[in-house]
Image (cartoon, rainbow, N blue to C red; front, top):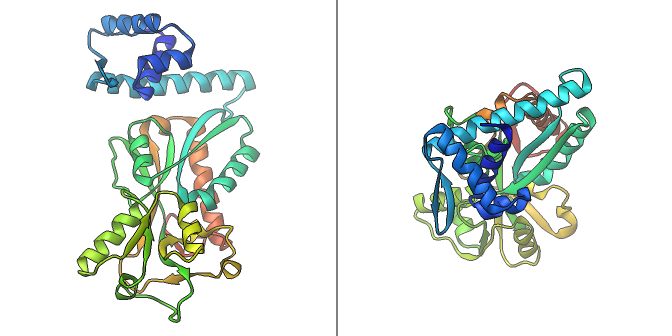
Length: 310
């Protein structure tokens, strides 16, 4: 078993396709298949299950994948340390942000990492909170911000950051706050399932036995804001999703919701394999520090900090 085999194997697992992995690795597919066969023979176990829809790792394959990711990361960091003559954070780190959070947090994090650790290459991934947390737990992503995530100590570490309030966003109303009854009478434009806001709203209306007047659903925050700005309805969003938007000029308002539970817990997740990485640990710390600074300077509004005193 050598590093090249581990690199090939991890790429196949991540792409769930030998053909796609061969293309990205720029090697012939038969050669890549032979490398996997040799690895399975050496380890005396089946690592991949082939099927018409692609390949997936067996339980043994998943175990090898986790260890392979750690080994490859440590090798890269050792090379960087030797190149610089010291343990300097360097290498590639994948970090995921939910769409709403990325509007307030992504740019400051990229700038802070670039300033402190110029040899670190960040790969920013935007997606749903649920998908990001799953990717981290499967070691396919290093770090991610996730909402209302359940701790999985056997797969990843979860660091609470803050609690974020949710608002009714749309054309201004006469009242300063709204109730569930008020919202049930409004045309609603909501995020698509399994978005955490959509799940929360659906449960709240169901528990109150109130209907939801849903006119449109979309997973794109930009589309939500465009529709709301055009007067097509109201939506539910955190203040972070409105970063960079001039509410007064747009004629929109973020109205507090006077109903329990319209908040979400924001946490920072890191895979166990990444936790052992010098570079990932440094980036993880930067995200916490940047988030805390944004809260302290009131750039990130409508939140309560939970990680450490501000």
